[in-house]
Length: 329
Ligand code: ADE
Ligand code: ZN
Image (tube, rainbow, N blue to C red; front, side):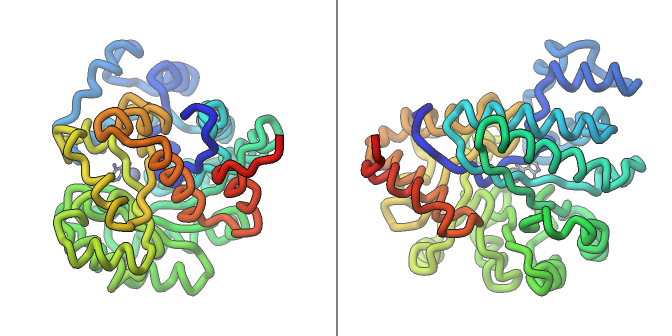
């Protein structure tokens, strides 16, 4: 599992902020936190659900202030990921929480792309950036996000939509995704995490996104499952996140294997690893144990992670050879 080459397609950079770093950044930036140290912070990571988690997550974001903070955060995640066999990481990041606190976009994205370049040089990992809009805000804010990141267009591969799903269906952001597509961005949308299967269908029909983040609820609708398989829509599932946020209370009934058996290209990802108790390999291990996955099935998950990525197919030829066992010694 450690050595198996894989792509991570669903990770929020802000969600990779480990408690030790939260406390360290807070001290160096003069930010007051309600928790005195990393242990107390870790103890607060017992969430009642998505909205409760998001309030802790946004408090954590307050400690990230400088270009150097964003660079360090990115390098730290990419180093960990590379050590877990991740060859490609498509990282979501939400600039608006930081713009609200007057952190310039150039400091945010400048630090992140510096980190991506440094990690590529150091460990050969291929990092890519997707900016994410928070769905509890108005669509006008999401459209404004596209304006704000335009100077960084060549370093932003795609756009996503995250945040509190209840009461904020994908259709609210139809024009955001239309505008993003018109600018050539790749698209992905959180759907079917706390919301129903209908939200997954809506993200495809109305927002016409290429990928679905989570998609857990899709398993409830056999017609939708058949469609996801037919249209080869990748689901970026996050088992430990779903467990910690009570989307599911038992991974032995987690729908990943059922979806995979039905031909849906499912993948395994960490979402917010510092908050949910595991990076990508711990997520692979959790579903492998709970669902009794065979080695061939774990390889299928890894293969799906590359075929569902937004990387250029040419760049993936070598890794597919490795995964089919044809790698050269
Ligand atoms: N932002 C960070 N993690 C998220 C999650 N699990 N769902 C929605 N938005 C998020
Ligand atoms: Zn997510």
